[in-house]
Image (cartoon, rainbow, N blue to C red; front, side, top):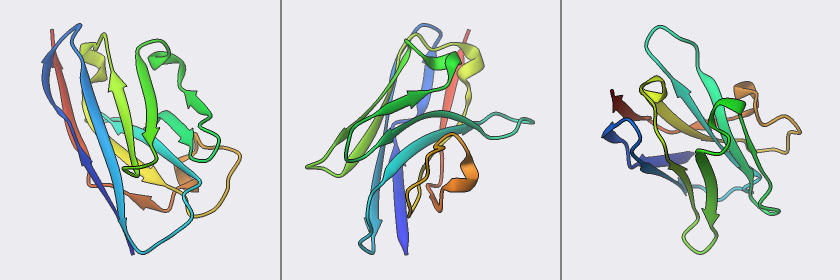
Length: 125
């Protein structure tokens, strides 16, 4: 079994920043990619960003381009989501997730096999 440990959420004022972390643990597996999703109350889960582990290629949804940055630390086996210029509409529970196989479409949550417990991000106006 694979566990994903997330941290870094919290309460911040609009315009502020937070950095989320995601560290996989458990059984060994090939790390193809890590994705970040979020779910706001009453809304469906939506894709935010992803990074392909070996190549470091990143993708973002349009609403966070230029504000969020996904990165990885190979030595720490950790992925970060740096969130700047936060807006109240960024308020949600944020989840990291990993697939156990290669998928071309990393924006589809159905391609991910393991999910973290989620971390709350609240942006006040």
